Length: 266
Image (cartoon, rainbow, N blue to C red):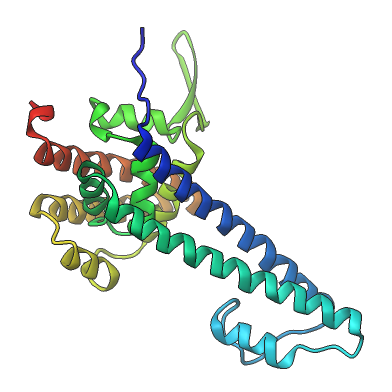
């Protein structure tokens, strides 16, 4: 029989919470599209409102976008209120995630904190990885974890003929989404500053976790650059980087879990 991992109550609760935030982010995109397309249909284009959906842009809509027809005025008001409402929902869910991580058992919390040493992996991404995967050390090798995620290439083999295709997508879609989002940050040159530096200092992460994270930056940046230089599309390169990023996550998690629970590691 093949053993499977059964999430406990703590993992299930955290998983439902991060998935609720993911659903809210999808709703936010839909509401923004509705409002944005409505404005375009009526020729409302800002000239000095900055990038779309910043606070400056939203203030421009509130102050300058008005219509003589009551029906149109009611429509834009409804779309604007929906955008504001979903933003409040997301803020509340992110605050709930903060509290849930603080109150989580130590074996969950320490791994979430350690994963944040990586570039592109803030608390929500780290919590999603842990909630969806559970204990990463249950995978004997990172290649097993990569296959489990569905980020490996499909294969059609017959005799001496080997043909590889698109990724299998056989694993967890929530996991793949956050990994690919994080992978895009590795197109930039390696550095430890800004949010990454603040996370590493505030969480007092171990030297091993920060060492692996720095190794990941150097390796994945070179990999991203090499793939795009060979003519690979950026989306394809990002998926390849996401797969290797998962291997670095595995290394950090295994080290952290062994430090927090030496008996289990033995």
